[in-house]
Image 1 (cartoon, helix red, strand yellow):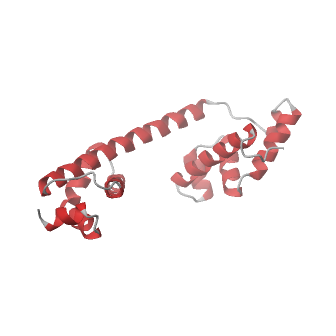
Image 2: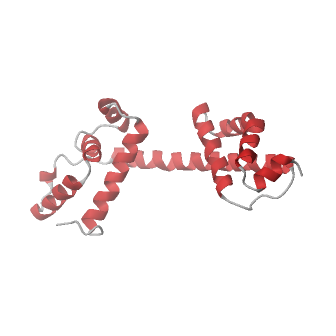
Image 3: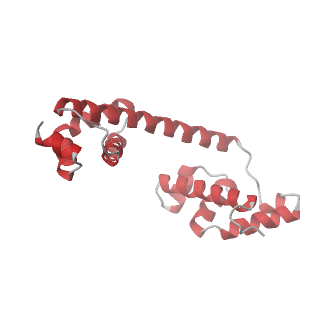
Length: 178
């Protein structure tokens, strides 16, 4: 066996570094067949290599087998990235079709309105603001990101986390409901 394979199998950082130096162009090319922009393709390569690196003892073979194994890992990661994006897009489309609640006060049951107000008040400010702009302001994630001067992915994460926290809080999971 050669040093690259030995280092990779032994999980020495030089093994991963050498593999990346040798084949990164190939890896990015493979990823770009699935994900259209270069930055996402590079993220995909990074994620695939880290995932492989963290899974010990999965590879045994020679240099060409290592290359094929890593290419397959990148390809699989790119498919996973596409599926994930597709699910996110479907959730956003579904959310966009919903009629936003005008205000918390429009909830008929005053006890439920009070519970919702309390749950909203317990959210971190940045999550509460993003959620309010989305649901009360009827703004898209892109519009919210532009208004707040925050990256789009951050806005999506904030809204998603806020929704999970509200769901848990209102279901009484967190023990913080009133």
